[in-house]
Image: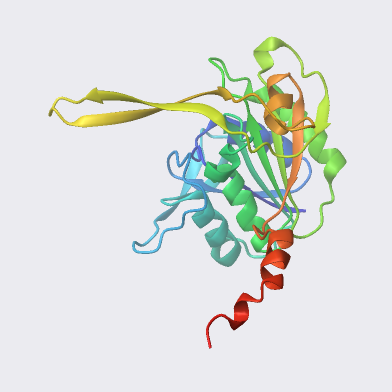
Amino acid sequence: MRILLTNDDGIFAPGLAAIYKHLVKIGDVTVVAPADSRSGTSHSITLQQPIVCNKVDIDGRFTGFSINGSPTDCVKIASMQLCDSPIDLLVAGINHGANAGINIYYSGTVAAAMEGTFLKIPSVALSLAAEEKMDFETAAEYCAKILSKLLPLQAGAVININIPELSKGPPKGVRIVPQSIEGFHERYVRRHNAQGQTVFQFKSGPHRDSEENQPTDTASLADGFITITALAPGMTDYEKTRQLQNKQLENTVP
């Protein structure tokens, strides 16, 4: 199995190294990741500037390609230039911080996995809930066990996996749940810098109380469960599209 491993925390991130050790047991792993942290870059790509690529040594444990670009850039360049044969599986992570709820839309980790599905590559995004001490090694063990049960994945599949805070003990179990769209408690802290300019610092808190009638990823993660969510690459609302078609708007403009 030919595996592409990437992330959005940067090629030297401990979460990437932790899952790498498990992936090499099941396939031939190529690492292509951003040169530095690109968290929150969503599905951005580099258009106007050349992208620098360097082969780097990761603390003597393995080598990989460092890309001066976004996670999406990494997947595109890997599939089109750096990998000599087709990729059987794309793994993004393990991310520093959960990617659940509306955070999925901002996540470079999930975007990398989604880019894989655009390219017909089975893809998995892996994340660990943020806390003061991150136990990526244990998280990687859980992720590897789940991957062993999920594989093989169909081309175009994208699976989002989150590990809860491990300082609170082992996960209570695994829940296969939908994405929450309730959002999080967020705010901006206003202050002034040394130049007297007004600056705003983003702060994020816990997810809002869910009004949904079934368990979701954010609520289940907060309750101490590993969450698994199958994501879809398209954003079309087919029911509303059918409703618009019934209005016969096509005949509005002669």
